Length: 196
Image (cartoon, rainbow, N blue to C red; front, top):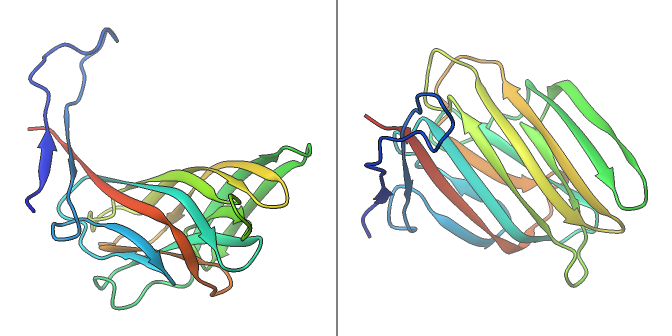
């Protein structure tokens, strides 16, 4: 299936009173440049196209081990291997039992964690990640994350991460922090490109 794009021909700036930068949004099926993946030990996206910003959504994700963390890593070799050290991240979290706090590191094995989920019925995780500069060899690769999950308590999480190495990062992997399986859920990858 071919890539799908939607573009706006409207020259207004949506009433924001400033010049807008226009983007083209794209999503393709598994046979295109990006994929929608289901049910795997890990979920890898290995063809990122030529987009400026990448956006991943994850819905109804369940892990095989209770309260294990969902995490993500980057690759600089098209997904043959994934970088396992040197990430920096900071996240804030709040839970329905009144708990809150932060997690951070300047030397981590994942770009960031995306929170824990349970392995009982409806103990799932939902959220999204924006990735910036992945395909720009002159800039660091950054991400921002937002997620909500249900395990023993419900937890909302937001934050971001960086891989402070100026190089092309051309694949993304979602996996669990302890090596167990992602047993259900949907992961979708979108590309956002500066409109020209």
